[in-house]
Image 1 (cartoon, rainbow, N blue to C red):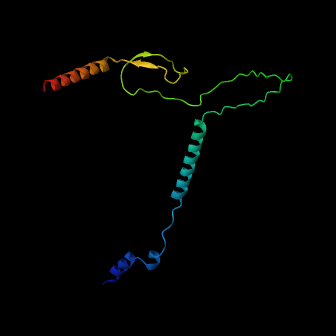
Image 2: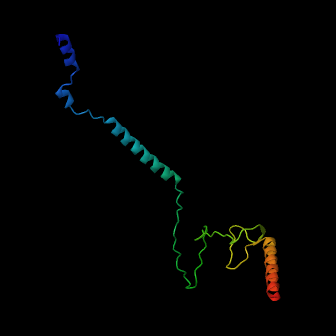
Image 3: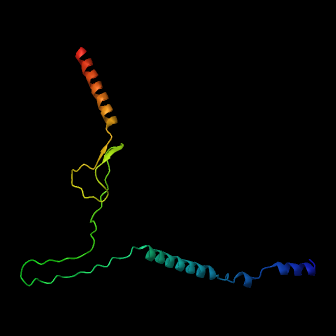
Length: 142
């Protein structure tokens, strides 16, 4: 080989010292990820704080004892909220013909709330009764 070719080949070789160096660490992706995570947590906390309903302040007052020893009367203003809410649904589907209560109205157990159209159910009952009568008649012939 000639000298210029050897020089060119020497330039192409990778020296051991360059091969053994550790790759430089990039810290900016980790910093950017930490900043994004912090922003996401702060955004979620802000959304939670803004979406909560305002708290109702309740003042508790103790009525003074009556001087006469009789019953005491306390007059106050305020509002009452329900302890439970109930969802009402029918066991069958159909068209409503009558509604006997309004939303928010007090009801008792067993009280009629609404009436469904029973025309189709009556027709099916008559058809079933006719089928039963036909079956009984067929049994009587044998």
